[in-house]
Length: 473
Image (cartoon, rainbow, N blue to C red; front, side, top):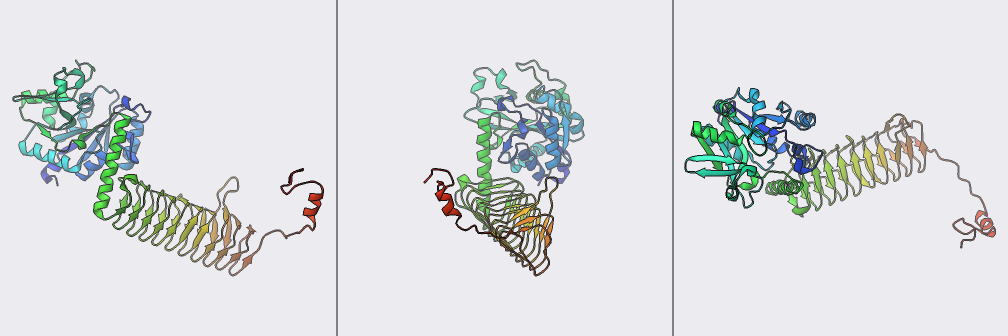
């Protein structure tokens, strides 16, 4: 944990205003998806774990970026950079926010692999050495795109790739873009930099040389895990980073005791929580703020999103569950779809080719197959026959169906909402129910059968075949 006397004195400033032109996307760079959350989620989440107050510089698509921050990280400060004139300019426009702190941690919004421990170690070294600037570097076989770290005796500076000479470009120690500054010194250094460079931008890297000359207390901390500082500047890098994030999540789950049949094919959101002794078959997706209780099995090709699943449940293959609640010992699938804040109570069963929308299915009730349950309330110990449909939409409004406890709904029943079936009521197969059914009653609502004698013989004599088309045999 960061020392108490330090914690309140540090602001983390995340740079998230860039356009990210190399991404070739209409979506802002920091909102590009890594697994199923924006890239910006990762640095903000690690800062939250580090117990640091965070601020984000927004620019390109500022309203969209700000909306995301307000939703997922409420209380995070946002500062607008109307013109994107470089990292030095971004930090400068936020000075009224960070100059109230003793130190400011500046970091890019496109390093989703950075870990909390690395942030804490940077802070610890900076405070211990009483530096004016401490920043993270790493070594890479391919330094393309990164600023190079130039060390010449006691002198230290960073040169951007676009301004580096051929010999300087051969340097493999590069800048991560993550710095911790003493704010009073940073204010003075920012006033000394200009945009006389190939990009006509104000580089934050230029402040490092100025601070080194004026104070001398500048440290470049070489990170022993270069992967953490890998940035994202293209679609291929985004895919590579996503794979590494996915692998990191899976490894944590395995360490926890989750059983995964084929880790290479399973995708789990960083926001999801999966308890120990869960068994996950190949090609499963667990997305959003999902919770999977202990002892549950999830079958292949199933997708769970923003859903809570109780302990010891059995999700068969090809089940899709969004924004819903499954209680303990529930069985669903295969090929079912549960959505829109539905609740499946304990020991209930939702079978194959069933859709449940905005409905509650009671304890030990069953919807085994080929049914649509929409805007409905089903009690306990009730059986819904195959082909049952709650006709919830009248062309203008969605209406609710209520089915009580211990009911039996015959196959191919149409329940025309709004309609209420009391406890222990039955419906005959093939009925169209338009009125309420009282307790202990059997509802029969179907046309009287009529048999037309000799119809087939007469049709054949007229020259029509079995399929009803003239001349067919």
